[in-house]
Image (cartoon, rainbow, N blue to C red; front, side, top):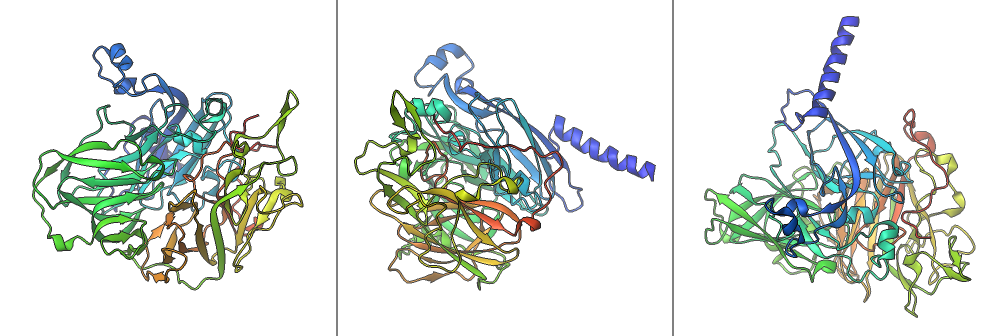
Length: 598
């Protein structure tokens, strides 16, 4: 027995050691291979960007050249780079990531693993004050979870502004018998100054948000920074497109003389569709093949255009060199465009219409239905009765920057069911008994319309500002229906994007506008991130089979000093049904919301 134990220990240690010093986890995945433990070390820094992208010759002169965008500008990085290292593993591998926070002293942080469902590991979802304490400067935290759902995923800072400043990277989970994801293209944005913490607020990036985005980037590089080029075997090579933008910046992707065959969405295999253009929304991922439909080109241009808040930015372009011949008849192309436009235009394919290869693993008869109306609410100028936080300087009262508006009509605040989200003061999953019930509110099931319960008498309701720790509570294994209603107005006529942690959703029904007939998809695709049309409605179903406290959020809608306002917590199960807190798990008290400026 001792000898067998030593052999097991030796195998585990060797696996751990090899993954730490090399990267054997990036291997061909086979059915007979044993899962590995893949160890990574992430150090988060504030760093300068783009000098490394300049030509090596006469490096100083090149970095002073205006054509080398934003030389010596600050960004936040993982191991000195943005995007950070790619994590590539096989299905069933264990991923361990030691994260050290070396950001400036005011920057608390955590890392969310977008698309990883964290079955059995809810404490490592990476949401500050929901699943863990934030990492203060100079501290470390080890994330440990199993890659148990395949696909193209990514990681990013839980803080929206830190994500926007550069803390993100790809996670690729391949599986045996399936093609590996060979070419990962991360589409994002770059600011012309930090927007995180006091630095961002003092430089005006958080006040008014007049020009939060300066450039579109592809794998961290802008147009004149030697953007990555690719080679593609037509109809064979798999390309993975990921929208890693923290802002409301969808990307439209098109390729000269070629069409895309979309085969996978957010880790779920779909019945293939052809589209000449793809619109991918924040948090979305598509795996595609490339097919020739026009004249042959040796160096074909891939163009990426920004939409919504990025519509005025210059396109980013790269080159793909096709190999081989693979033509398809024009009548095989199902759509000119794949997007969230769910109109009756037959030339456009709505992403809610995508069908899965595998039938849904749930029925669409819900145990609970929640109606979630979201949008922007104009609130009058705040007073001491409306907020719990303010400071006084020279007898003048100040409030956080996201409530401080020069507009006489007040401030537009994002909301779900008329309340803005306030994170818990302590991690609700690991320190449930330390929560502050007086700041909690709840949207009840089966009520339409469904204004959230209000936490205190001073929370007067519309049009006054109200924030709370907003919940919906469901039983373990319940089938849950979420009805998202987009309350669009003149300030925002763009689709809304929602990401659910810990689960995948099926968009079985939708309306493209409030007066439209309901559409039905009997074979919808399982997704963690969905898009709701402007003035439209989406019914998303999920099986609540993963006990925990899971964030439902839209990140790209508004960047504020308080983090995410359009969010709520989905509590799956009661306190006694949660997994035990890991031994030695960090605790904390009295935390302030993200990036408060005092």
